Length: 609
Image 1 (spheres, rainbow, N blue to C red):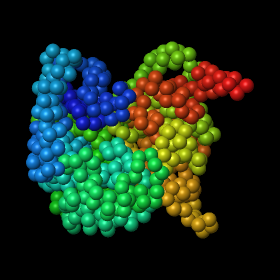
Image 2: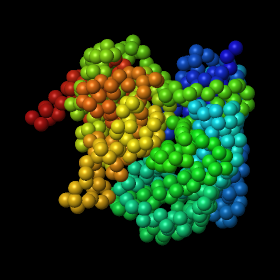
Image 3: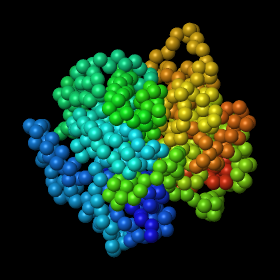
Image 4: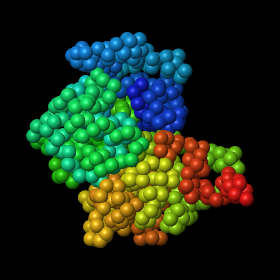
């Protein structure tokens, strides 16, 4: 008899559900993809329904349910912090305590009530601590029998940074740093100070960093955080307000860096670039110290990472190239959406006691764990919208799309099962020709509707990755930033003078300018065809036609919206942006042939007359 285990993450941000069967990851999805609410925190009703539907089971077939953190321990931390913070904690006690006592403490009851729509009999619900969920999501799917595991995020119940020994089907915590001392919250403080949204825009700080210089590095290391040689750290809380206040930073923080936080949506200045570069440099230094110390302590030659900070591809790239470990594996859904997966895996191996079998690739199935749509479902949708489309065989489709891309067009690519986690990996992707200098600004400004400086990533045939990027071994989940090879770069010219700040964006640095960041690095995705053969065929066709084995691959969404889930989502995004073509399964659509587009053009022409 099969043993099904359901993992849940919700009520904070990035709600999700994951389903395990006898140790195999069957399905996983974020709730935001269904509700279209970015980082939706509500109970993952749609994600649960999908997981059960995909497995062909009912909730009654599930043995146990595991939730990704312990709300009772979290409440103790909030109360303890408030009581020990003097007058600043009084406000927190007054406003936070009623919500916890009346609602937030009773997660099992809330989950049981929500799950009643699926079954009158609710499986036993158990809590897995937040960082154990992260550690389980990192280690148990990894292709290692044993490994050091580092989890770095904002905060769970108490823990903010932890080290673990992963061995077989067991995780043992060997070190912890507790709230309020947090690398994730240090980084988020600068996210706030630079005018961006905490828990959502930390990747913007990483993207801004190469435009600046780390001139505030010493100030951060002297005033904000004390870091020991072994990577352990404490923070000077005089500069922060997140423990009990409403903001991330205090007036002392503002004074240290010469003024108030940047007003959101105002013009970015060199100060923001330099602040981003500085906190990024600090983060890299601390993580490298931690990695070196705990490798020496454990002797493990492999490393696993999870937690929101593990999505920092620049840190990851430095770790991979540092030679501290033979191999580094990172959970693709390292943020809180992966908490449901980690809770389910921890429950599977550490509570239920199932035997772990190591997959030599990994157990994530390429992260293609979400819903898929059949040919008939897609065709029915297209007909319902009166769309103009052409259907192709697989070989002809890839050849045709490769030709379209080589002509400088932008293509929405919707295929197979949706990705789990924050990255599009060739199932829900926007694609372009990386050789085109203006492709980055075109996709960012006219399609994604976001800042032009945001870096785009390359998807490259794995066997050719080493010809284009340094130190790349395998990076299927787009989690490592690596330098573009010297022979693919252009020599810098002395005239005009070297640009600074945002002006750096205008400089063409390599043969693939659309994916080459200002520091000549790129966040690389290697594609080998094991889990997404169609995407591999497309890259192969493009390589055959152009001699270039890579494409721009960015997430299929507009700014502020989740990645598309359904054909309807994809078509809506396609029609609302400057994308030229859309591929839904075997069907190809040209924007200019769509009735809605022609009506819009005709209406515009008539108004001009």
